[in-house]
Length: 329
Image (cartoon, rainbow, N blue to C red; front, top):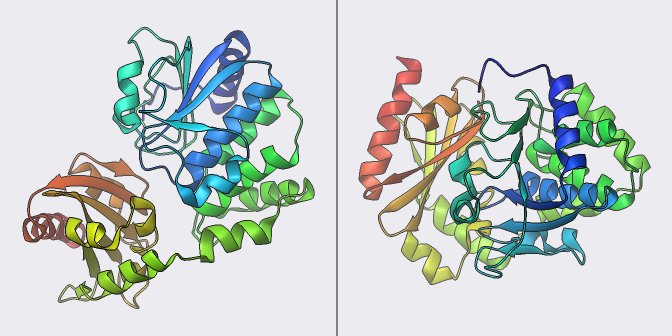
């Protein structure tokens, strides 16, 4: 992240000005969106609605089935659905770098004004205006501050979107990013009628039968390093095809190796295409997985990051374990 960024209060003013002065927005989050990315996209839609602006919500992957209930009658297009989308400004949410927009980048001319709203410490401040707070628990927390700066009206939908981002990116308010500030925001949002129990049940607890079968398949591959500090599981492309799974079905699988007693680093190797592995990295505190992911061109947070690596499963596992071993060197 750039060291020359203005104070967050000044970034808020610039971001608010960007939204007030624009008229026709494209709002996009990162590929394979998680709860924070989807809820932040929907929150931007509500913000722009209150500001009286035109907008299109889009994501290369569309809105995963798991989060479809959040959208109501709002539509998050996938990249193939409407080739002639009109916009004059862009807002990116929860994108650690510009490449994470995926194919949507092809729609955006280089000179198009772009507001970059994010909380990843690896964000390089791309765009015309950047609203970045790396100590925030979620992009939704950054948006909470922006909503307050704009003086908008809280309603149940807007509160639900922001709460969802906080809920999912803190692991149900269990991770170390669950600060007193996060809990104060959550309390305010609950007062606006957020259905907290419904969100927790649907987003953190409910499993499809396909997810259970993937869990069974993944845990059969569970391996542990000789010192017991690294554990990993893998899912091959043939597994995914055989079970009729989607990327959404693998969301939580990386938590299982990480949660083993004594493990400091949990890893999921997921073959998204033949010979291409998405590597999800989760730390229990001793390893900075953002740095580990960056070694392979990825990024993310200190405790949760990812990257994509070509090769066979054995090759990719060997490369990642070799690089991870440097954390204890």
